[in-house]
Amino acid sequence: MISDFKGKTAVLTGAGSGFGLECARIGARLGMNLVLVDVQQDALDKAAAELTAAGAAVLARKVDVSSAEQMEALAQAVQARFGAPHFVFNNAGVGSGGLVWENSVKDWEWVLGVNLWGVIHGVRLFTPMMLEAARQDPAWQGHIVNTASMAGLLTPPNMGVYNVSKHAVVSLTETLYQDLKLVSDQISASVLCPYFVPTGISQSHRNRPAAMADEKPTQSQLIGQAMSDKAVGSGKVTAAEVAQKVFDAIAADQFYIFSHPRALGNVQARMDCIVQQKNPIDPFAERPEIGVNLKAALRTAAA
Image 1 (cartoon, rainbow, N blue to C red):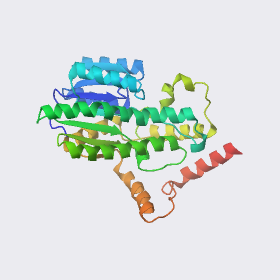
Image 2 (image 1 turned 90 degrees about the horizontal axis):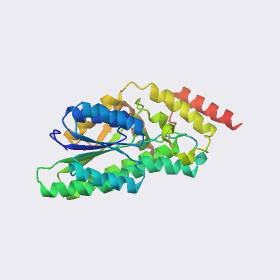
Image 3 (image 1 turned 135 degrees about the horizontal axis):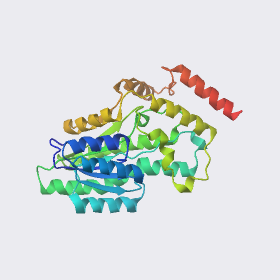
Image 4 (image 1 turned 180 degrees about the vertical axis):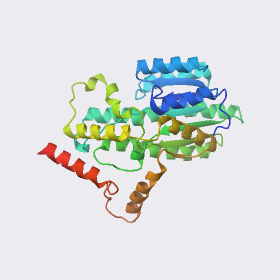
């Protein structure tokens, strides 16, 4: 929970676009110091220039969040420039689709590296800094927000690697919240679970590691990419609206942040199956035509 953002420091990964950039823009308007982190240099430079022009004190760093060494160097740079951050937004993420058995080891390593290890590094490096600052100042306040997804609460087919990474982030963040409550009343945590919001995540392949350049996508991955492009691109809720929800949640110490609360009916249905020991339900029950088309496309591709 943070009651006053002015003069506080925010560390935002994935800050070159989407939720990271929109949260940085809100932070600048609120008078925050901004640490902008992204793996895409041109997007990072553009964001840094915009937010510096808006009057914010900016530290911009090109970082692969999956790298322990690069994240450790980032934490040291943040400490040296601004001290312990008050708001840490572990937000960098990549999307990936395809039938779960068709994903290569490199697919798994890339997606889990960014989506899960990036969050792990952010938590393990910045939480101790924040706790030390809180110990030194009884009025100090901090908050960590980790970006998961509705795919962290559901299991949509043909996107298993992504689902696994986001379920792990939900679990990690729920545990972080509970662990923080054991040791401090000054620092809290939230998990962001967006649904389909136009952010650029469906074009994550633009930042695929060079080591994956020789891997051609499978048919199921191509089909998944096309469906993701359509779903994300047609999203009506904007990244800016979701970013405002993030700041509102921090101010209110609200743990779960949803872009599309109406989608929680699907989560309830999944939980009911678990409690009642039923087999998983048809994920396309509300939009059967999507399931029919996906099944037809996959079976045609396999023929």
